[in-house]
Image (cartoon, rainbow over the protein chains, first blue to last red):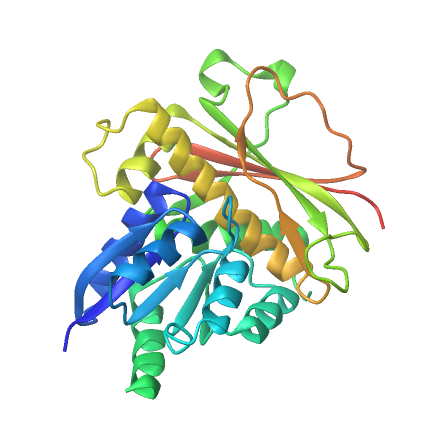
Amino acid sequence: MSYRVLVVDDSAAMRGFVRRVLDLSGFDVGDVFEARDGLEALAILDENPIDVVLTDINMPRMNGEELMLHLRDDIDLQDVPVLVLSADSSEARVGRMLAAGARGYLPKPLSPERLREELDRVMGASS
Amino acid sequence: MTKSVPAILLSSAEEVLETMFFTQVVGKRPLVQDADRQPSEKPYLAVRLCFLGGLDSSGNSPSRRPGGQLDVEVSREGAQWIASSFLAADDGAVPQHRVADVICELTNVVCGNVMSKIASEWGFSMLSPEVIRGPSSEWPYEIRYEESFQLERGWLTLRLGLASA
């Protein structure tokens, strides 16, 4: 099964890098969608069946935490697993994002191996 | 925090550059004061990221702890090499504005990595990195750490400022 992945980050360079890391990870990736913030992500999620969301935290208009709270309150989207990719890996921040509903938290710098491990764990638990 | 701040700056630079920017730190580089710099030693690009300390009880308004800033300075050769490695582009083929975007991302990840080691328990909040235009003489922080590294191509300097608690 190929998984449809949504990458949410306000940096085009970082979205491109995450795509590259997904390729290198060997994870079975199908279509990859991109959004610049939480609002764009919600629009894509409304129109497309997405298997997993990879999101940054700090973004304009709607940040990653707000995106997760929207998903948690949406009966059609609340089961879509969200992984947070962030430079901020402080205990305080990780705790807040997991409490908001993140299934996993990957601190940057991001490696293909760590991303694969986390995707296997989260998607294995979801299937 | 078991390591000293200079050791954290080194380990973070190595970890971030190798893992995400496919660039090796080959050693430390002597620091040169601004006034003593030769034209070839002036940075091609300088990026500043300010951060606020501590998450308050509602989470989004950091206020309990003082903040600081991280400046990243990089040589022309270093900036172009890092950008082309990150974007998987040919060396020298990345336009200047995209080089700046990549160095801003590098600053963001290094700052997060450093601060997660220094201030993990109380948290912090990072603002957006910005390219510094003109001389960067403003330095309002009492505590300052500075390390410079020779890369496999070019060089990079980290300057961390922390307000005293």
